[in-house]
Length: 370
Image 1: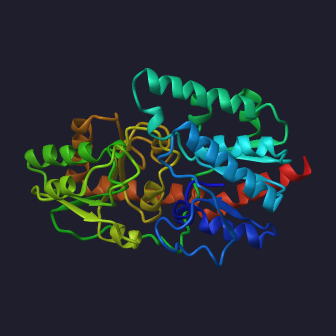
Image 2 (image 1 turned 90 degrees about the horizontal axis):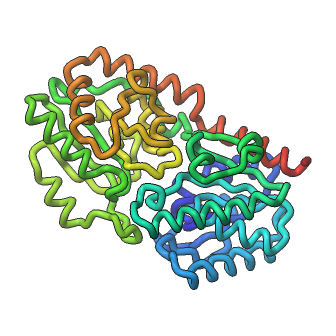
């Protein structure tokens, strides 16, 4: 169960194919077709469920739970696997109401709710924790986490954490992101951000960091790759991005389907997330390509980068600290090469799609035989 088919296709299509090869018969229940054909028809059957990501009303909750219940009745699955926080709650409730025998809850990060401020956000977080504790009362369920901070933030009971599996997101296929040598861009150090163009990804902080490092005389440029997110209230608008992209040293390049080629032409990856990440796929792809990384010391990001090894960790919402990290990399090509090598080695050891698929397959088999 997922929110939308395009999200599943971009992150978990390879996993679905691997599950079929391992003898499972996956079926996707999600919102379908909002971004056209996403190429899932040859991988797994799909059931349409009305689960827009922006729906936060009681009516939206009821519709999602009802849709997931209908899908469960139709498929009668041995395992209900809920991907992302909203399907974890809506799908988990549906699975419990339908008496599904086994449940996997897989938050892929906690999203903007966990970085929002104010009493409404605090109340919503408390509600999420309470709902998850209710799901934890069943015995045949497991959690699948992308970092070690989320179970603490969600208040997951210790005995469930001990039985949980931890994976590096959906993993990345090494064949799709081959390691590239660092480019020869002369004196200029090219930095790229690959992300949705939303405030929580630190887009404005990234631009400000490059402004500051350029003001100090360092030849650094920034390419922003990604599109606004119409369903996210914190999305930047096209006009705003076009204006920001007209600044010296900054370009908004829009979305692309060839992310590997971005890293081929880029010296440094950057993601100044404010939080709420699971394990950012763009950072794993950058590591697979052999790129040093500047990112924030928040859950998920710090599971990819260790400060001073694969790159630099800086505080969230602190563009001055990010500028200092960029200055250090700009001044010393040796550090860039050293961190690039460390990033690739960490990817190859822990973050390939094969490693993730093996972990999830074992989780399924343990649940079935439990």
